[in-house]
Amino acid sequence: IRRPPRSTPLYSSAASDVYKRQTMLKDELGIFHGCLAQVYLVLLGFLTLVLSPYWRSRDRSKSVTTGGDFGPFFKTLTIVIFFQLALGATMRHEHAGLSITDFPTVYGKVLPDVSPSSMEKINAQRVDDDLEETTPTYIMIQFVHRLVAYGLVVVAVYLIFRRHYFTERLVKWFVLIMAGLIFIQVALGIATILTQKAADVATAHVAIGALIFLLSGLLSALCSRENLDQGT
Image (cartoon, rainbow, N blue to C red; front, side, top):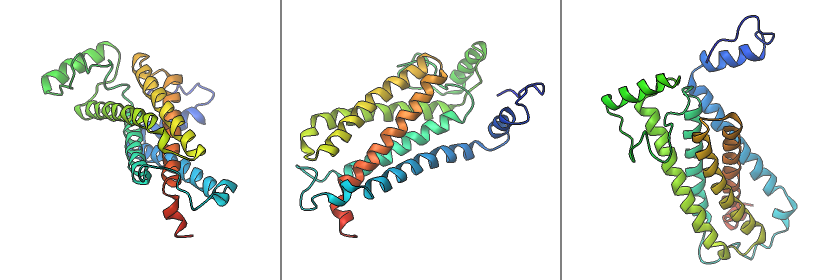
């Protein structure tokens, strides 16, 4: 992050604010801010759902699924997705670019090698490529982010094959849309690496992640609504 020149017209406003936020405030504040925004989005979606005519007019005697209770499944999935978003926020606010610059390998290896000798070589190469040096912690964070993404692909395939278990049209559409968005999200994640974090691709990656989190939260409510009704 470079300080904007004082001759820049926006130095005293937008450019200066961005510089101060990214360099003078703790990264943890930015991570918390990003995660809190995602929570607000899901909360807004939940309030919109429960205050909608659909929620009030639904047939409470019928379950939205067959073959089991999917409420705990989607609640767990929502937690996992939030964890994934938190990893992404951590990666964004390290301000060091991509800690792993290749895909599907990790600096040419299947598993990350974060030994001192390996890190010395990795950072030497990053300096040659005009990138900030990275740390073993950030490499492992990005590697775990990849592993969770692979797991979400498995979940998406599972939901597609189990779509007939969802008897209500809205729930089934939410499930299929979320599964499709997961595939798009993984593709955008790969593109983010291959384009070296191009702004438009990375922005789309963040936006789609928020939509997946929103849909998972709404499905948690929809598939658990019999329990929610007991408190109304």
